[in-house]
Length: 65
Figure 1 (cartoon, rainbow, N blue to C red):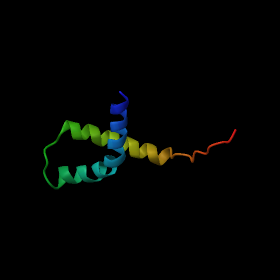
Figure 2 (cartoon, one colour):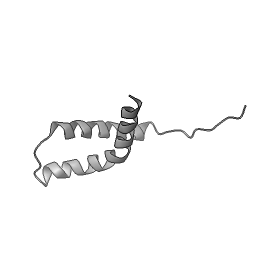
Figure 3 (cartoon, rainbow, N blue to C red):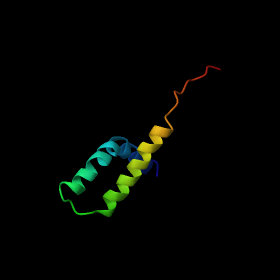
Figure 4 (cartoon, rainbow, N blue to C red):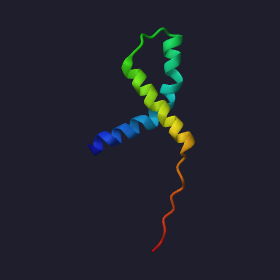
């Protein structure tokens, strides 16, 4: 399960911005047929981008004991 979780994090880290940018171009200008899997990946990526905008990561600092 950890390998699957790590793979999904790695996949969405690198693919979310190109997918959100180029999927509408693919559908509207290149006449690609509508695909439910790409639509699901698009909405997951879009939700992750919105999450990154509204909830940015805080800098983690290590505290010495």
